[in-house]
Amino acid sequence: MHRFFFHLMVVCLWLVSANSAWSASLDRNAGNSKELPAASQMDPYQDDNLDFLDEEIDEKPSPRVADPLEPWNRAMFEFNDRFYFWVLKPVSLGYRNIVPEIVRIGVQNFFTNLAGPIRIVNCFLQGKMESSANEMARFVYNTTFGVLGFGNPAKDNPALNPSPEDMGQTLAVFGLGDGFFIIWPFLGPSTLRDTVGMGVDGFMNPIYYIDDAAASVGIKAVDIVNSTSFRIGDYEALKDSAIEPYQSFKNVYMQFREKRINDQH
Image (cartoon, rainbow, N blue to C red; front, top):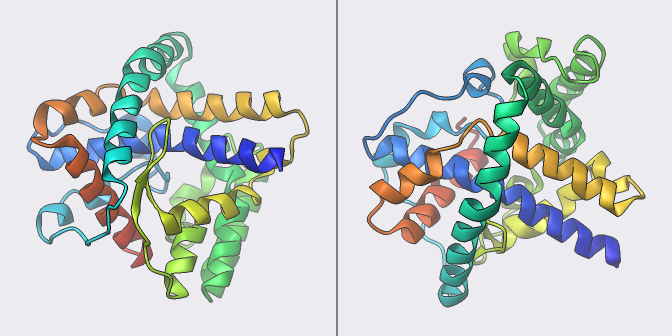
């Protein structure tokens, strides 16, 4: 049971970095475009790169989702905002100033490759056998020729870059609806379905099986801080451009998930 609560905490921490990525997407569509960080430009397959949403966001309304927990969600949105400015941003800035970009890109590649089993299994469950095989080939190729995934030689082969899949998408393919919108502590727009999906995905992440809980949390923290180091300033830009940040985050998240489910990446 304690591993379940540990995993839930890790899920919430992961959403810290995802939230600033969604803010970047909204900011660019509000007219405050900025150049993407080098890592995202080099590998559009990275899960935290939402550049493919740039044009579509303004062309269609966001999918509707129930929000019965709005008071809680708004409180968590405010909590997460302070966590970003008081903790995540200072740590990520210090990390970026110390660690060279080429090393940070390698770390980002490593964690993306480490999550390969999640994508392999979910492609299989959705009946995308070719994509599952391609994900397996990508995982093996990057693990070997990319030196444990720190390199990403597979990025230059389109066949080895299928649409990234997760359990939230798989549950949607099975016909499960969004449920309702929820924001978790430590930054996390989500839905009931996606929350369940992330919990299941966590059991397929090798980090979960590290016996030392402190080591597991530390490894995941490195992933989060490293990812955030490429996006310093995006969240701030959102706050300056959005009339209603809470509603904007919700809309962008729902569009993001709809496009992932429909394999528009």
